[in-house]
Image (cartoon, helix red, strand yellow):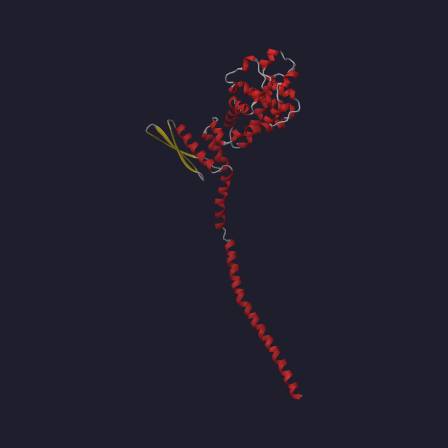
Length: 304
């Protein structure tokens, strides 16, 4: 029965979709076979889907935690936990499973086969976690972690983190600390029942936002400043622009280089008048040396 199941999966197409070459198909087959089908067909020899899902979930949580720990070095435990819970949520996992087109490889029972919201359901997220376990068993932990990093790369940009539910104030704080080593400054004022807030950041500028509460106003302003931050092509060009601005100042304060140039110019001017004097002195010596020779020759002619 398991051999027949293997024929239902286009393995070359699956490997191309995952970007991973599988050596032993039994792990991936167990990850793609939903418990609903296993219970209907009584496939007891097949590896347990729920156990693989459990292991895949653990590998995913560990890998995402490690990435966040390295990416946000100044982030506290609360912030890192919040980011992790969002990134490993069923909503994100279902989106990744949909992108990988796992639906066409899944083997479902009758009860789940015609699910109206299959691509957005929990079943897609569970299958993705089971696939992670299959990659781990088949190719090892490094390959599984590379696969996770590749699939989640899209969601680690500041703009994407905001769209999936992270507070704009949190993202702005992390950006400013990492690239500018400073914190954003907030100012708020209550006018006509609305909080009008301004957030400023050196090297970037100011933005304004308003809301019914102070928090809403600050987050609206922070969101606009994040967009302004990203328009400067963070993180690559922000640091280079700051370095360019600081480099001219350091050159202007150090006057050693210009002084050396001036000294060289003066030395050339002084050396130029000395050279002709040396030539003239040499000429005088040569002329004086020639005269006695001419005198010695003239008496010889007279004797003749």
